[in-house]
Length: 219
Image 1 (cartoon, rainbow, N blue to C red):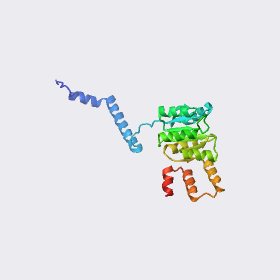
Image 2: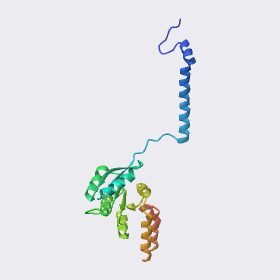
Image 3: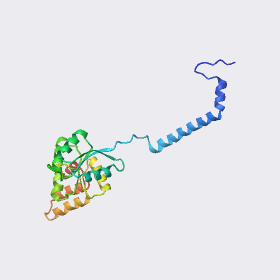
Image 4: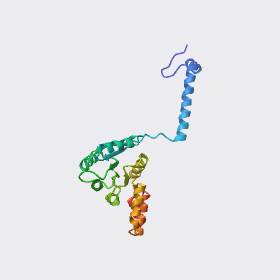
């Protein structure tokens, strides 16, 4: 008779186990899963952990507008609105509390307007990312916002696709002006005989270039 040794299976049991259809099937399934997984890794590369949604604060004094922006941004999970604010003070407090990746703000806020908010945020953090979404598309409004440090500028009647494109540019540190705004800026300068430098700046802004890159190209 065989004497079992701890940690080592008797030969007759190993042979029986090897011949068992159930165990052979399990071994085949395990090998198949391994081969399938290796094929996946070769075709897709190693699995990456899912990226957290991009955090956003929405600043607008109209609840309906804030709700609409939130719905557009959170529709497919790429963005997450972490806070809403109605004016300069509440926006600043929300930014300090949440430090979002992007701030989407209206210009026409009660009290200190959205341009003042952009200036203050940029003073506190030069790397802050702010996009203006407003009904005010006049040349002076655009110039003030861009000069204050806003990277993006779109109108409130833009579609979801354009808003998402704008925010992706802004997150990457690139300028984004809605096409109609960039065209209007160019037309506003036509009667004033813009300098070549002004034309180059506008061209860079329309292409989504950052302030630093525009400045480097002007040297």
